[in-house]
Image (cartoon, rainbow, N blue to C red; front, side, top):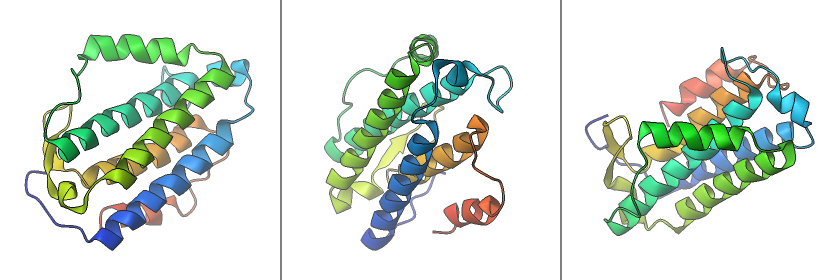
Length: 174
């Protein structure tokens, strides 16, 4: 995404609410899971449920970084390279289940809090994804929502594919 498409304030608030609902569904689905359940394989080949949850947590942190950049115009701190991120995800994935779920919940709550604090004008600011492509800050909300819904399926903890295609298609049109 190289050009900027403007979003209304109401649409942005709706996306934030969608992220909150999706976050709640995901964290409710994994709350109370045992260490063994989170060490079990996910639908992602070669990844445990713990790895998927660690990925969600670290993605939320990356999105907070992007929103801080859009809000302030300055990098909030150094960005880790791929090797540092891989190490951090492995460490997070190895946490006991209760701590891992709390970490995911905390990261998602920080993202939502940062989103709710964004001034309206900052949402159209361009930010650069770690992969190098640029997008408006508001698109970070869509990225987070897609991440949550996709990885909730990957966890294989009760979310059904039924009706999800319609929801995911709406992500690109809102």
